[in-house]
Length: 244
Image 1 (cartoon, rainbow, N blue to C red):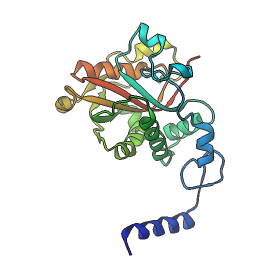
Image 2 (cartoon, one colour; image 1 turned 45 degrees about the vertical axis):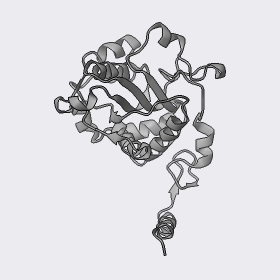
Image 3 (tube, helix red, strand yellow; image 1 turned 135 degrees about the vertical axis):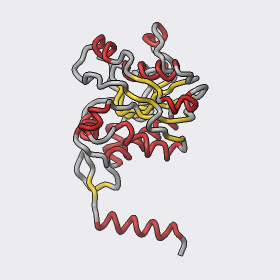
Image 4 (tube, rainbow, N blue to C red; image 1 turned 135 degrees about the horizontal axis):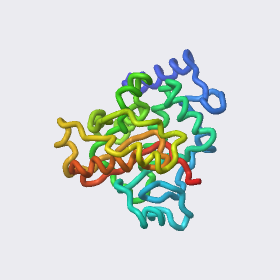
């Protein structure tokens, strides 16, 4: 018997012995989110700004929005798998604050599909997660961006460097902050690890995160990467908060 049938048999036995349920509807599922819920709630193929991933009209798919044309961010492109809206926002919160790490591989698979479907998107040469500050990482025990980046790296076949960038200090929580406060919070927050400079120079870096809200965090990180020689920076985020 070949290895593939054996693997399929073992996977079937594990599903029978350890049945899983959809995190959204509670029905039996082979993944963290069942296929019907994924089809219903993930906005696959939605038209977005190629630079910041904010929603666009269908006729403008793959173009840059007016805000990015007027004031270009430091990053060059963004791919988002879904909107940060109910009920997917609750999954993100469970992953981010509730230790539901089993959700990360599903987020990565959903993001992988969005990356492959993004019109004209050039794959990065190297992936890195948005880093957490030392106190927040110690408190939480994990970095949710890294938990998504690990399986995404495997799916895309792109190397992952978890320590490419560092957060110099623990910035205030961005949730609940105004746009100006978010921007000020992120000033001088990041640096490239001294032993990673050669990994950055002249390369296209993909930055992975769970949620993109105002974009100030990702913009500050992209500006840092470019200051240290990155040729291009693209954001790969699971969810994008729609503009209000």
